[in-house]
Length: 151
Image (cartoon, rainbow, N blue to C red; front, top):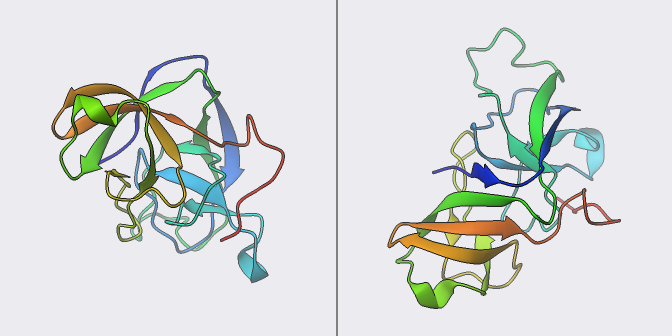
């Protein structure tokens, strides 16, 4: 369960992670916008609509910098970037062209595309791979949006 970069001109940038917060490799991340956590990245929530990118480094409680707000590499997608993603539900060719939400797993577990969720429309399915996998593009990222998500 993760977003895997398939094609496009995405590049990597370093962002400060929220300390003491697990982030899976391949998880979509967003910038926290409230309270003492503001300005740090964490795994995108169900309601996150402005995705920074995809995390490239596993963050877990056994890391020496677990409690620190250290920089981690984030793959920054552009509107042309395509990702492979697992789904919650059963994917079909009919999903191509539709917008869907992410699911909300526990921190440290990468999100999947929720084929039953259409409230936030975080990704658009651009290709059918199998009943459990689709190709997607992120609809609103920092690379193509002026406003940040509220978490």
